[in-house]
Length: 220
Image 1: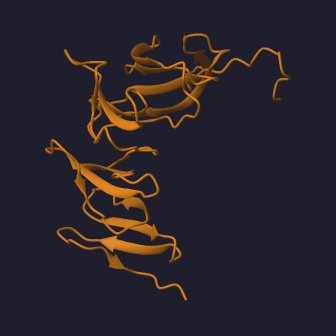
Image 2: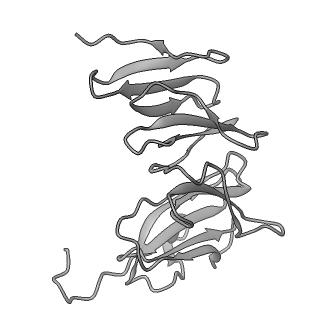
């Protein structure tokens, strides 16, 4: 039931279920009555990622929980009192050594790599052009990260690829319009939906090494 104005929020948390013992252990997260669970996910190594935010979205916290542990650790916290809309998301990197977070940590929304171990743990590093907006979660594959960004025009979405060894993302699309990327699991092939003000959405395929996407569908 959704609370009435002035009612206290329901408590929201994440729990670990011991299947053999039929026992549920709720994790100790900060103020569960004021923080919503944005999402949670397991890394390849069995570490748990928990992304939370207050209902007003002014405070955001990302936790990790080591395999076999019951006490989550705060990886990164962000506060911005002037937020008026939100687009939060977090994904594990392909090898589980970092979190790829979508955030307005600086000015525009962008993707940040947050290492979970080592001297840079908890320090967000911007992956895309700070002059652009990224408004959806990163698509993490075995060899690369794919994402859509405005690329200098707020009315457009262009597809970018950031390989494991790359310092800067490579723009894969240039046609004016709106593109949505659907990479293969290995990251070699890329399907995408393209549309603009004059044409309906169409399916395209960008094989490895190709410069231009190949159109698959032809709407009447």
